[in-house]
Amino acid sequence: DTGVSQDPRHKITKRGQNVTFRCDPISEHNRLYWYRQTLGQGPEFLTYFQNEAQLEKSRLLSDRFSAERPKGSFSTLEIQRTEQGDSAMYLCASSQLSGAIPGNTIYFGEGSWLTVV
Amino acid sequence: KQEVTQIPAALSVPEGENLVLNCSFTDSAIYNLQWFRQDPGKGLTSLLLIQSSQREQTSGRLNASLDKSSGRSTLYIAASQPGDSATYLCAVPNDYKLSFGAGTTVTVRA
Image (cartoon, rainbow over all chains, first blue to last red; front, top):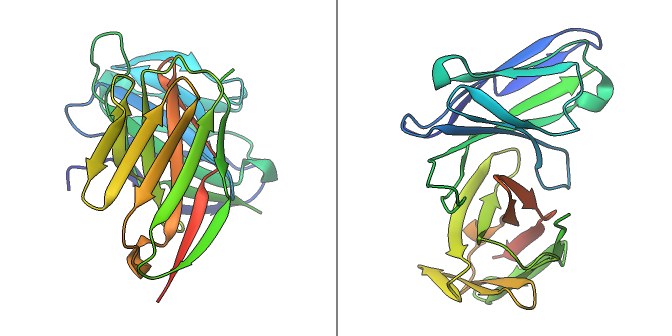
């Protein structure tokens, strides 16, 4: 399978616990994105990487959230001290850099569902 | 700030009918517009990417049109099938991130 893969697909955690999600992008893609989606809404941007550099973070990404992309390959999204409001699907996506114009198709993974109880 | 709206939120049609899904955006200075499909509990599958210089893009039974000046895009799905039942989302780039509409949930009745 050469698509974007995410792990785990589902996670149930108690409030206050830490969780970590992993994303493996399409191998030749140097841009990687994290989005969050709640029921009935479109995905909302959280952060993105170009290679290993984290270039933008949304104001939605509180200090409890941290994302990394060591060596510009896979990425992790960690949520510390989870709250019930963190319950959502966390989507990872990747694309190829094409000059300065974002003209390329963005490919999404299957998402990681988080339920905080 | 780019706002993307999709109307209607839900649509139910009998099999064989053509589907018309609407997407509007507030800032017409876009590079492209992308349509996605999302099945329940799943990720997003890219259907069509239409560049700002294009007026239409076609893939099989799917056709997307783009009118930048009016801030609108329309996704047409011909001869709908039950397998077309899903949520369809449109998205436009805002710098290097996508701004999404809330989607139109389509049910095709057999």
